[in-house]
Length: 542
Image (cartoon, rainbow, N blue to C red):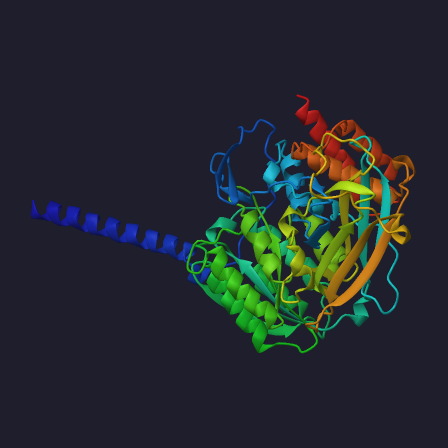
């Protein structure tokens, strides 16, 4: 009897030990201390989901909107679309430029999955600025050229559209300053899916190929804790840098704030005076450990920006994507924000637009427009809701604004109601205590005056440039290809947002205008846009 008891007890002890050993190994594979030591097997990108997806529901908390699918916690900042403003009461319109393009590729991701993009995910200026425009290069002494055009509106009869276009100077690669880059890569458990960490690795491999001997790269990762994977080395050591990236594996919680601090500290240690000092973060934005609040990270990023280290944000993934957080981090960090939905987008951002993504030629770029009340009764800035500034901030050099990179184009559209047009969009009685404003004869043809302020990257005092725009407007069909294309994209954005400010414009008309204005389209981005509109139009008609 004792023999059987002894045997039974021995078996129990054996299985308990075996269970503990298995669980210990399991924990070790997920523990953040091991994320830089393991080499994951190759992962193929998953096929897109089927068209039969459950309907989205929206919940709102203050400025942030969450769109919930099963196991979905994506979040987007709540936007209130710009309305028409009367010139007599508000003659000035002031905003910061925006070169981000994340909203476009994120919108494309939804449409390609057969889904309706959330209205809050559509930032119209980012759709417009996803594309390059045929603006002339600036004179040798200026960082950008300023281009303006006026034509009739394609969607509201009697209205007119004003286009303001900036073209950043293209700096040849050999003239770019040396870079001090720190790759900050999120390797937490939330990045463990094919369109996240595996795509991050592919993306950074493309960037590594663009680096020169005088450039230096360090790598910081974060999950439950943050750590330095690679001390900064020359960009010529591509194999070493690539191997460090290949060895990363996802697992653990997300200490985003700790990762940012470590990355900035590494950038500061190897700071290049007169160079391009920048942290490039790749994440889904799902910070949940330590200093992870927007406010705390904003203060850190703002401080480092003042010290000369900028922040570029690359967003990845779906399901728990935090667009609302990533957009503001890039804004505070004097950088740009892109959403990488596939390797083609990574190539566009990190190869085709390498200079614009990483090299700033003008910072704190602000635009202020003054409308002539004798010519314009009301106006509306299309998009840029997140970039609107107080009028008095235009002359305040302490107020942060957007940055322009090498070769970047920035396009803004205003819809205006001429003074002699009766419009239901802006219909108010004649004021009793204010007389109608009569223009000075020398300004009788001017529609508006545009003022721009910008700083050179190494300076704290701004420069002022002034331009005027006079009429009459062109017929829309005779406007430039730049003008027509921007209007087609803006029209699509307004339709996606169900904007109350667009009438008599359909998806078919968007396609017609876009096809007429497609131009050379060497890279195929405009053809892709037309195909997206057609795809969405067929989905919405089902």
